[in-house]
Image 1 (spheres, helix red, strand yellow):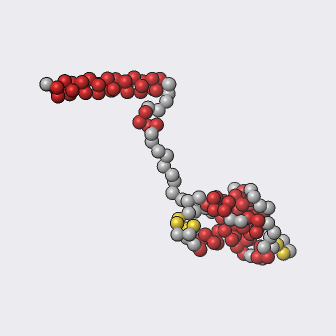
Image 2 (cartoon, rainbow, N blue to C red):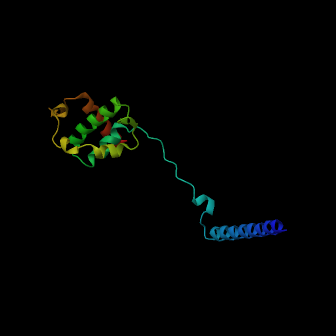
Image 3 (tube, helix red, strand yellow):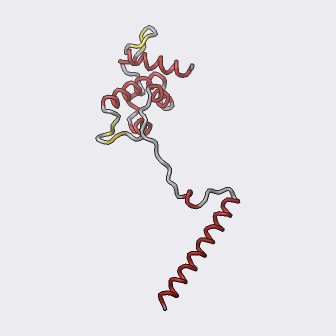
Length: 139
């Protein structure tokens, strides 16, 4: 007898709860707010995408002069290309954070590898980066 009364009470409470959820969803719909279940959805992180040389150069130019950014870009890109875009044993998640972690003060004076002589770069890689960056901004 007691069990039947408890089951009936549970059914009544469940139906009241469903009615209240429906009322809440109706109010949220009228206010143009997503319904309760979609508020809990998590944002998916995109997988790491290897940056282009031009992206690295553009980001480095925000912190360094053009010549110093060129030297930094060449070393940064070569380093992580050689290491498979890994930080230690772990795959890289954010290349901009890796740029911020590097000691940029060592690139304040231009390296000998990327000095300009008679209007040309010493390093072929530096010349390619420079050309790519300027073609990228034109297009």
